[in-house]
Image (cartoon, rainbow, N blue to C red):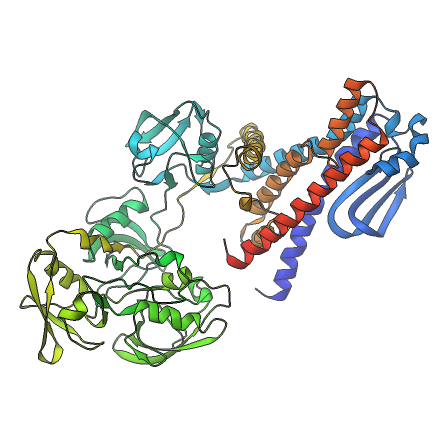
Length: 637
């Protein structure tokens, strides 16, 4: 993105936030005028006054810092010391202090009401156009989860939860999160054209809301086809999967499951592919990638040796399974032949030939923030390529995610455990046979080893070398061998749209209410139940960063996404601003209610303490969420 585009997206975000703040302050302005309070200042932003106009005794102005705004009324000040200075205004009929508690409460709540109205209107506009969101369809059911125990299956579509209709997966999550912890969640689902009912007991996840253990469905349109099979027709980005092994899938998870169950063997897929203006059906093949589990790998930073993934002590060579180049992953550039690409077999790093996975990772960690040189095998060609290793924040888990098993070449990167004692071959040795039968790749070798439980198998190597391998009686060693489908698809989406204006209005009001409920639930989970970590909270930097990302897509009909986002912010602001916290509107409302109960206002000293505590809370929260925002943006999570 160019500097001009970046600046323009930032301007759009600032304009959006300014509108939200303007609406909030307009609520205070209107209600104050309704009860006869004089408005001295109506400001957008804080700090020095930039420009403005004076009308009817009110200074309508824009200030230097475009984050927030305020309405200054006669007799209403933010700090108790100021209250003492203007105490004489409480008898002025145009003073805020001269109004009844009910009138002052109306003024204090005006901003919140206007934010709710703005959110509802924005949502209504979005639903009149049509809101594209994640479909309420089950994609993956986690094993042993409440959903699995209840009998949910991939492809099930949620219709109602606890009697309330749900249209998107976000509504599904909200309905489950808000359900009564003491009662089972009542589910109505559509399966095969029929409505079925079942119940599930929601559980509390780690640092998440209550859930039943399902993930949303991915669509059947391929976003990333993964690595092709040499010599076979391959998937392409944009293909729509029609059949897998002759069976019509409902969701992408069923395709992944079928490919994974192929255990690395080619699986036939029928896809619809756009060739020019004509859609055609094409038969392609996909296989699962071989994976070897690394003990405790994801939690280590590789300061020392890491246990290697192996097949009974045989350590395969490695390859890059995805492109480390972010721009290449996003499809912005064509592959640079002199840079690392997905599928490259790693045959040399530094002075090490045929390195193991931990050796590759340690080498790359030593090149953080620099260019790393690697020797790779691309097809049949050996090449010297470069990799731009991320800076100091790069972690072991990120690098491990780039690297997988080179299952096509039966070349050893090493031997571990007892196998290193029974087989004496150098690093880089190539296996040619198993139990007297020729083997072409690691998948064929694994099948041979599985058929030889409790036996001693002779392995043949190139250059007439031989070694023996003891196969255990049990199959426990097979647990370290796994397969995964290296293809990606976007979420299955649906469009929520009011066919008629009254339907869009109903949808907008409902969405506003759902967002408000979700904010209250989040506050309860973070501050009271402590079942959700405070790290999940977003601060101003993350809010602006997210808004800017959406603003970048305005030219691609993203204006409605941006409007939806601002509606979310407005509804959030309405809730947060009316919490019983000193300084914000909710804190002022608490003081007014307390005054009504006591028959008199708090003393200047008590108000000073109240406001000091509130100011400390606000500053502390601002510092925390800002630090959290920076961490989230820098680390990516």
